[in-house]
Length: 347
Ligand SMILES: NC(=O)c1ccc[n+]([C@@H]2O[C@H](COP(=O)([O-])OP(=O)(O)OC[C@H]3O[C@@H](n4cnc5c(N)ncnc54)[C@H](O)[C@@H]3O)[C@@H](O)[C@H]2O)c1
Image (cartoon, rainbow, N blue to C red):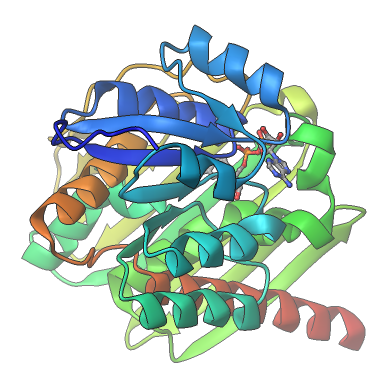
């Protein structure tokens, strides 16, 4: 094993060098005080070439055990297809390594609970890539809501739509047994955000479109005390349709609008004023060069990985996007699917 004792930087092993792994690799390259020391992927040669091209030339191994043997590391970052998260997350935690695991945490609550159990047994820190909690426009909405700047929140509408994802290696995204369909892969982001903003709802109604890839479009209403939230997400769009994430938050004295596809940024409209831009603290981490996928701006991902590695350095457990948060987002999204299917059977 390499002696890296003289290097005080945090050291990480990246597991999975596809679309998201490439995004994370680019972020580790610019994150101060953090070094990627090895990577793991079944496609060794392609991954090696890709990491080199992205400016992160680290050795690539076939297994996590080999990678952990090759170099000391503080954390493991799992960017594998979702059905593999549990296996690698548990292996990393059991070896005493801190864990960053991409979202959704798992495909079932039972699988998520086994990851939580491994974290509890080892005492290692963990965070999940529920990145919308770190996305500048959504963070600004959370702050606007918490500060009561616009009065009471009356309603919130969230949308996440994407062209059919054809970029996953071996088309795993379109296989429900591997990805959980658009419900778990895409829509879970907004369910997670609703829970972060307002906590568990007192009521939930859902409808779901199903196709060969599983639950491919979800339409839900979350009921809160005097607040209604509608949330819609799916990938039943042609390949080239593009990507849109959007929200509209209606407060007593203001409306906040964001639509990633219109280029206007986060806007506020109040009283008899024209809509105007609302100040948002952006992180300029650049654009990803990690191949196809529906998002290329690295800002939100930079924010989450900076928070994670800052927590590790400070010896403080991450309090945002925890394993428990991700378990709850998964459980509520699975409930949306179940309610949608019950409704389909009744009709
Ligand atoms: N947070 C976000 O916004 C966001 C966006 C996209 C993807 N994701 C998540 O990231 C994860 C990875 O998705 P992706 O788009 O990068 O997928 P991908 O198909 O682009 O990459 C997956 C990688 O894993 C490797 N791999 C597959 N099986 C393996 C195995 N058994 N052992 C070792 N390596 C293996 C593949 O070779 C590939 O390089 C998923 O959980 C996905 O939901 C999150």
